[in-house]
Length: 149
Length: 149
DNA sequence: TAAATTTCAGATAGAAAGGTCCGATATATG
DNA sequence: CATATATCGGACCTTTCTATCTGAAATTTA
Figure 1 (cartoon, rainbow over the protein chains, first blue to last red):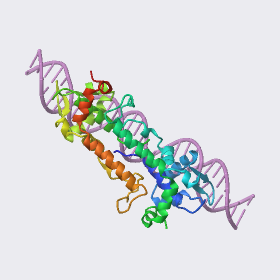
Figure 2 (cartoon, protein in one colour):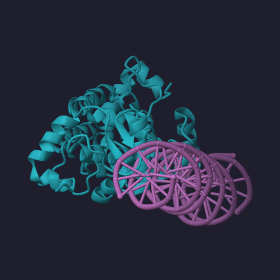
Figure 3 (cartoon, rainbow over the protein chains, first blue to last red):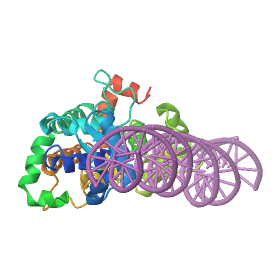
Figure 4 (cartoon, rainbow over the protein chains, first blue to last red):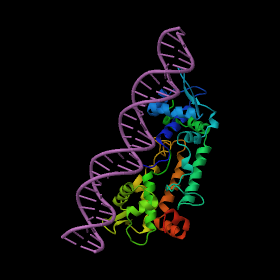
């Protein structure tokens, strides 16, 4: 199988998007998130704990506790989530798997892949939770997808 | 970790590139390939067997046996190798992991990712073993990378 | 035809990713 | 203060991917 992000990273992105659509500074618990998004609950717990460690989310224990964004939505890009879970190796490692591949010593597809990789990075870095959140509230389809309302 | 192709797929791409740089219709054995490219031999064997089943390579047993391209190099694109090992799910599945994501029901990054995905496909489909092979023989650096000469 | 070489096929082992479980800890609320 | 509700931390299980091993089958060469 070939993919871009790990399953755990996909879960993280979905969960952060879900939380961004919640009102204000309310904490959302993993029971609700895992239930709505169909993500295994204990695994989601581990995943969101990682995001807390990386300062993307903050958490509170006990009743009314849960998780919420650690910063304002316009200060969190998709890239921050990807970085926290999967890291940034995909931005530098060779598509063909040559360990020595670099600008000075390029593999046969180095430059083509380089420009594509830059665009992936741009997309992830440009799109903040804030603008995606706005997009979600404006679209019934997206709300449905994230099981909102 | 996040990556594009599986390790097995990377091995396959490297091995096919290595074979393409070999003269004419000579069979190359896995001992030589795994040795030169630093790929575990038994695993490479399994991998190349998959490529034989998918008609990308052909093989011959016994002395002077080994593997070689099943078609002329200009009839094999990188995509054929990727397809044989990893499949093509990465061309249709949602980056954020939403199972229901589609054109009619797009995720927040559906269209951006769509164009990037198309370019990845184009790169893999456009670049044939023939033109990469030409590039390799013309570049001392690339020959070194593939441990040729 | 015998021997050496090489792929092929299937079983098995090891490592990493995905997923579960349980007890401890913190916090809101009665 | 007691209780219920959450996250937290660690151990553990399962599945998938990566890698190894062994013996059989085919083919070249002497």
